[in-house]
Image 1 (cartoon, rainbow, N blue to C red):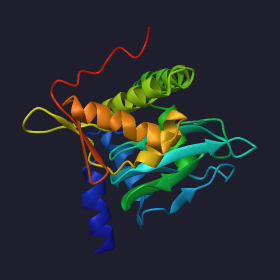
Image 2 (cartoon, rainbow, N blue to C red):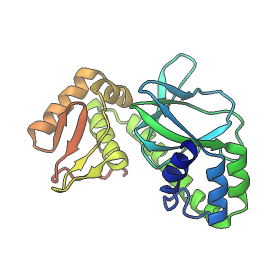
Image 3 (cartoon, one colour):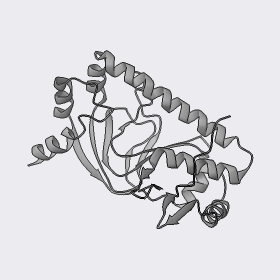
Length: 233
């Protein structure tokens, strides 16, 4: 039964971007090494500095990637939603994880050995080209977060981070709005924006009063009129 479950769920990943460039034989080899596991909200998948042994791909839920400096001042974060491979940082070269991965919801994930996956990937030129494009987008997002962090106005930082979340995690609804189907607390939004919970709450209230945003049960919905602003100069 376990083997059948793995076969069924993993096969649904066949034409996801992180796997569609592999041949059928390569995909089957990866599937043979895959382990299916569930994690509860708050559980740690791996810590920064742990030996980089496995790659993961979510089938359900949300994962937060984070890293702190020596003084425990938070300075990096990212989110991984369903059907995304992670961690991409350090692929082909790093021996340890460069950040911590925490389940933000109950999640289900496949994982497989890094060494085996990289061995197959190195021989597939189509996949390597895809990987270059994907890593370029990751670098672009990191640069954007640095840019947001340098914004002097706390109000603007919160607004910009909200629209980054919209672009990264938002899902279109039938009525044309954009909904983030994962819980994001005001405290988390404030930490990500380098400000206080009170300031984050004021920004949310302002956007709600303007009819651009709804925030219920820790979930954001962006109304049709909430057009993502140009976040880069």
